[in-house]
Image (cartoon, rainbow, N blue to C red; front, side, top):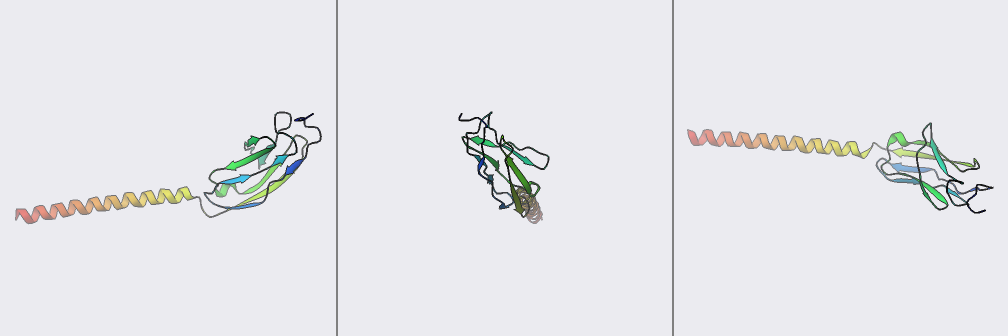
Length: 130
C-alpha cells in the first residue's frame, strides 16, 4: 500500500555541510515512500527535534540564517527507524551581530555630525555677534 510505513528506506540521505554564518542551509532527507502521517520523517539535533518541511517523498530541514550554535550532528529518521546522519559546520560569527555593529557605528556618526553642526552654528553665532 502506497504511503504505509511497511519496508520504507531512506532514498536520499543528508550530506555533511559547511556553511558561513548567516547563510541559508537545507538538509534533505527522503524516503522511498510518500511522507505522511503513516510514514513520517523526523529530524533530531542533540535533544531538540527541529521541524522539517515535508514534500511528497522528502522532508527538508531548512535553517534560514545559520548560527554557530546550529553546528553539530543532525539525524534523519523514517517510520522504520532507518537513521541517516549529517554534520553541519558553521564558519564565522553570525552576521546579524555585524549588522547591529554597523547600525551602532552609523548612529555614532550621526551623533558626531550633529555635534559638529551645533559647534559650527555656535562658532558662527559668536563671530557674528562680536
